[in-house]
Every structure is written in structure tokens, then in C-alpha cells.
Amino acid sequence: MQLYEIPYSTNVERVTLALALKGLDVEHVVVDPADRSPVVAISGQELVPVLVLDDGEVVADSTAILRRLDDDHPDPPLWPGDGSRGAELDVFAGWFDRVWKVAPNALADGHGTDVHRAELRAHVTVFERLLAGRPYLFGDTLTAADLLAFPFLKYAARIDPADDERFHQVLHEGQSLDAHPAVAAWIERIAALPRA
Image (cartoon, rainbow, N blue to C red; front, side, top):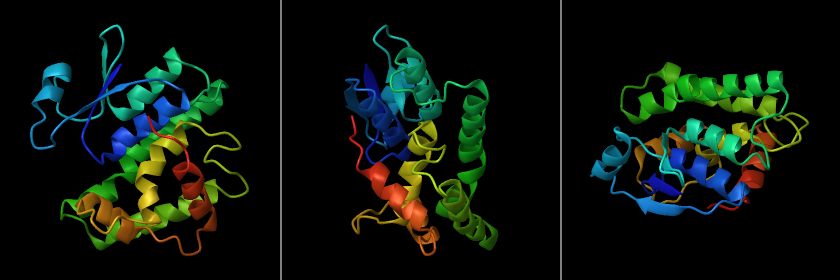
């Protein structure tokens, strides 16, 4: 398999966590963020990550890649085997990508408002509530929900002072871990996982 990526991508990190968790080898194809023509050539669009499977099939979008990896390599599972719990995780993935990401993207693009800042802060409390009395977002077992959220929430804990990516700075500045000990412990737990 080949993984087309750009350095420091939060969406790419989702996939590298899943690949390592499943013990899968991948060739990393690092693309210059200023020239995404290799990504366009392989997938017809410019967003990363893009995974080229062993049979040559191309899968774009980090959530779709996680789902495909789970379908093709079900051990350990990223989605609960129970249909209703799996559907709940699908709802979470959709909420995270279509709702949660709105505020930090708007702030990073310079179009954010005080409402976006408040949403970003409030969402940390949502995660604190999800983690109440359990180690992972969906219970006692690591799932795709943890892999989908971690690359973004980790910035609440720390940021490399040399990291000049505005999106990462927004995540660091806008997410406080004050009064969120479960989120802080969860970040440390997921940060300790290997990457592919």
C-alpha cells in the first residue's frame, strides 16, 4: 500500500494511527503541500490522505480510508461489531467532520467569530462528558472515534513552538484542558500509540 500525505496533516495522522494499530505496512509518499499534482494524478482531487491499496484501488478521505482498512483488516476492529453501536460511531464521524471542524477551520481562515471561539471551547466539554468513567470515546475499547478526534484534540495539550501552521495554533489556543482531566488523560493515552 502507498499513503499519499503532506507533513503534519491531522487527517493523515488518523490513517497512520489505524495502520499501526492493525500492524499494516505502508509506503509513505510525501507530497509538497504547494504542489499536490501527484495527489491529483492518482486520485483526481487534491486532498490528503490518499491510500493506494495493494490491488491498485485508490481510496481518498481519512474516514473512508479507516472504514476500508477496517473492512479489509478487521482485527483489531475500529468499528463496533454491533450494528447500532457502529451506526453511532458513523454519526460521531459525520458530526466531527461536518460540525466540529467548522469552528477551527473558520478561525484558521480568518473568518471566525466569537461564536466559533465559544463552540471550540464548548466542544472540549462534550469530549470530557464522553470520557466520563471510561478510557475511550466509545467505552472501554479504542475505536475509530478516538483515531478521528485525537489528531485535532491533541493540540489542547501542547504545540511545538516552531509549529507555524495556523490551524494547529487555533486548536492550541482555542481548546483549554482546564477542568477537563479526562480529556487530558485520554490525549496522553492516545499519544502513546505507535504510528505507521
